[in-house]
Image (cartoon, rainbow, N blue to C red; front, side):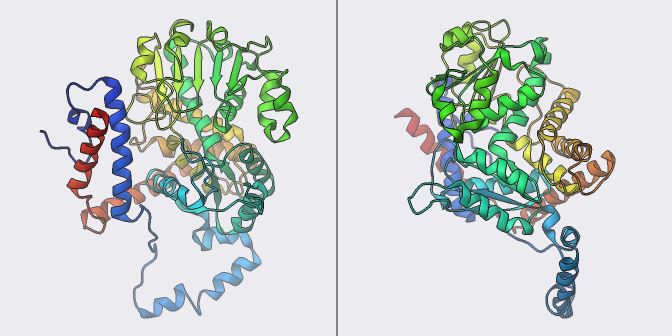
Amino acid sequence: MKQLNLTLDNLDEMFPKEFSQEQKAKAKTLFYKELALHAHKFYSGKMQTLPKAPVLGFNWFNAWYTPGVSKVSTTIRDDNDLSYELSNRGNLVAVVSDSTRVLGDGDCTPPGGLGVMEGKAFLMKYLGGVDSVALCVDSRGKDGKNDPEKIIEFVKMVQHSFGAVNLEDISQPNCYRVLDVLREECEIPVWHDDAQGTACVTLAGLINALKLVDKKMEDIKIVFYGAGASNATIARIIHAAGADPANSIMFDSHGSLHLNRKDIRADKRFYRKWELCQVTNPDFVDDIMDAMQGADVLISLSRPGPDVVKPEWIKAMAPKPIVFACANPVPEIYPYAAKEAGAYIVATGRGDFPNQVNNSLGFPGILKGALMVRARKITDTMAIAAAHAIARYSEQRGIDPDNITAKMDEPDVFPVEAADVAMQAIKDGVARKTMTWREAFDEAKAGIIHARKTTEFLVDHGLIAQPPRELVEQALQKAIESVKQ
């Protein structure tokens, strides 16, 4: 049997030839889960803290700490904005979660979210040159229920140590109130990546997909399947970017959203969903097959598949249909099945399929852009600017139906995105600092290069160990055996 290389580039060649496409997809999912578990145990997580200043001799301790550092404290006391220059605050993000909706696994308890939040920090550093720290908090009240006010109070208390806050994996409806209150009441940008980040990258993919099928944003009919925080925000951002809400129909677990959904209207916590009830589906279409008739685009963020989205839905769509099946860890329909049903372009949230729509393409650049100009908030127009930056960069390097956006391993997309976001922040009047597009691009690119070279240096010099080959091979073998069973 051919040996699996540690880059995993030849993973597809490792599965038995008799495996079907669905079996290979299942095996990949199991392999990555098994590999992640054992690799995280081997490394004890994936983030660490390192100094960025030298110790040139013993007396430098007196400058980096007491007595010299007291001058830093009193200087910041007299002008808090100098904390961005005299500490790492200006390039530091808090990744905050109560772990109540971790990927597709639901409530994982506060520490259960650490793997994902550390992953966020890992990508933020390697892709965007941004430092970050995972903060998983307990939002349960005395009654055992998760209380959004506890997250709000926590973020307000810690905001003075950070340049931005990335909210993550907070269940709805709490996530709506947490984001909306903190966006308005904090002095730094607070961003919900599951919602705004996913919306940004989905919009970027949609922009380029529409170019390939020669359709205009303002003319298309869209069906949104799933009405959680991600898809509700995707709909809002896509409408703000030019799609007609009256040509949109959204479904949740109880049917379609429309003005007669008294259950949504009665629950004030779901105000974001009620907003969509008021502007979408004016004809009160309540059957999914009726909704799919002539639809140009299906955007599904519902529950893991693979049989959630039916092939007959896609067959009912308009010519050259675009399908986003982005549930994690398994899409609502596998790409090959969607293509067999007639889909022209299929996107998922996974990197082992074509057209990965993943917020990792967005948040490193968006947060870097916001940090560079010391933004007070991240506006929807900043997220839309990031989407257009991703789409433009991707189109310039070439797009096709299986390659609608750049991938995470294309480093130049992030400084382009960061620079466009910084310029939009200045335009929106939420920036404390101004700079040119070129200055922003150069600063972002330098930070990304530094982060990557630092990691490469640590690996090359054995300070970050290579994963044991047997660890990787055992994960693969276990995945294959599980599928065979």
